[in-house]
Length: 499
Image (cartoon, rainbow, N blue to C red; front, top):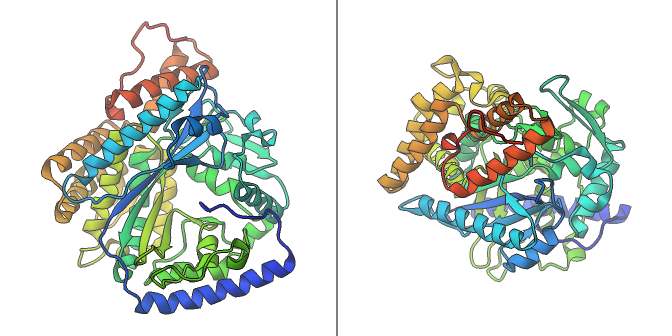
C-alpha cells in the first residue's frame, strides 16, 4: 500500500480480472521462489512513523506543510494528516551498523522536528499521540491526500458495511466508541523493522519472530493512552486490528480471519503466507498491472508481481513477508510491524538490537523454540504482553509461568546479545544496547510505564486527565531530545507545579 494508485472505485469486471491475475502471480511466484537467485546479504532497514503536535500539544494537521519544509524524498505522508513517515538507509547489524542506525534515527527525528518548528509544531515519535481525541475523525480533514488512502477507506468501510467499532478494555469501562471511517488506524504510528532473508531460511526466521512477538511487544510497549483513556500498554495492537477489520460481527463469529492478523500456524516456506493471503482474503484494492501501467518485468527480468504485492500490502500481518524484485536482483524480507514509534533513538535502536539478535540466535537452535511452543501459545503471549507490558505473566518452555520482565532479564536479552555476537556486531555496540534493554526490563519502565506513571503523578497533583496528558506529552518530547533511554527519564519533581 506504499504505492499510489489511479482509482478509488472499481468495476465488477476489473475485480474479476484482478482475481485471475492474482492467482497467476501466485503460481509464478511459487516457481520463481524455487528457481531464482536472491540477494542474501542479511541487511536491515527501518521505517519510522511520527506524529505532529501543535503548541498546545494537540494533534496538528500540517503534514503537507512539514513535508514540504523538510524537502527530502525520504519523508512521506502516512494515512493521517497528523503523521509523517521516514525511510532510513539500509545497513547491516554487523560491526557498528546498529550504532549507525541509532545515529540515523536521531538525525531524522531532529531533521523533522526542525522543519515542524518552522511551521509552529513539533514531531512526536510515539505509538499513540496521547492528546488525540475522537473528535479528530468527525470529518475527512484528518486524512492525507492520495487516491490510495481514499480507496483503502472506501473498500474497508464497504466490506464492513457498518461503522468501525473500537471496544478495548482498560480503566473504568475501557473504550467503547464508533467511527464512520478508518481514522483510528491513523492513530497508530510504528517503527517497522526489515530483515533481508534467504528463501531457505525465511520460514525459520518468520516462526522465530512470531514466537518472540509477546516479549518483544512487552519490552517495546509505548502506547497506553487513546482518546483520553488508559487502555493496553501497547494499545496499537487492538486499535489497528479493529480499525481495519472488514468483517461484520457475524463473519467474525463464523471464523472469517481478520485482515490484521497474527496468523494461525507455523510455516514451512515463505510461499505459505502468500498462498494464505490469496486463499483467505478478497482483494481490497483490485488495481491490475495494466491499470497501473507497470511493466511485467524489471530490467533484470525478475517478475514484478504487481497484483500479488499490492494484495500483500492489504493483509496486515504483524510479521509480514516482502518480495522485492529489485533492479538487478530480487530479494526477500521479513517486515516486523508490531513495535510502536519511540521513545528515543537509543530506545528504538535497542529494540532493533533485541529483534535482530533474537532471530540470529533462535534460527541456530537445534530444537527450535517454535517446536516447543504451540502457535496458540505464541498468539496468547502476544495478546497478554500487549495488554500488560512488562508486567505480563506468560508460560515459557522449560520455565513454566514466568513474569515477562524476568524472562527478558534472565534469558532473552542475554540470548539476543549472543545472537548479535554471532552476527559480528561490535562488542561496545552490544554493551550499549544490552545496558539499555536490561535497564528497561529491570526497572519495569518501558515507554508505556513512563507515560502511565507520569500521568498518574500529575493527576495526583491536581491536574485533569486532559491537562496531565498535555503536560506528559511536553515532558515526553523533552525526553526524546535528551538522547537518554526512557527508563532514565525523570518524573515530575515533588512539589513541582506542572499545570
